[in-house]
Length: 91
Image (cartoon, rainbow, N blue to C red; front, top):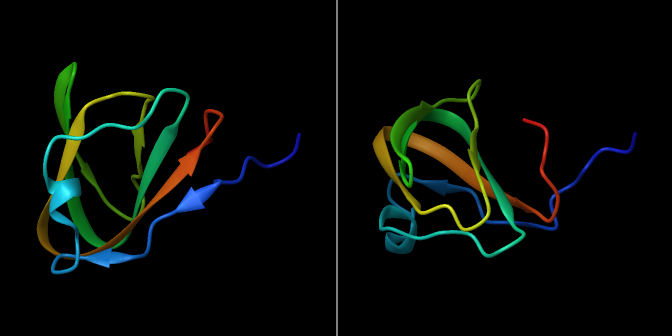
């Protein structure tokens, strides 16, 4: 089976360059999955529907389902990127 590759990726952000839009409630479009990948440090991912939180690390990426409201919060120095897929990705 062929590897599923992202169709788009954000730049790599750190705790200072992480856009305000990602720190506030937002969601992916219909048919779009997001994978938040942390390269250094930690990042808190808050899902709003259903409500829950997870701490993302280099060993623990975060999956965003299509149209799932969420936001992220740096917990200290970190580097992260979001990959976008049009099919459900493997983590």
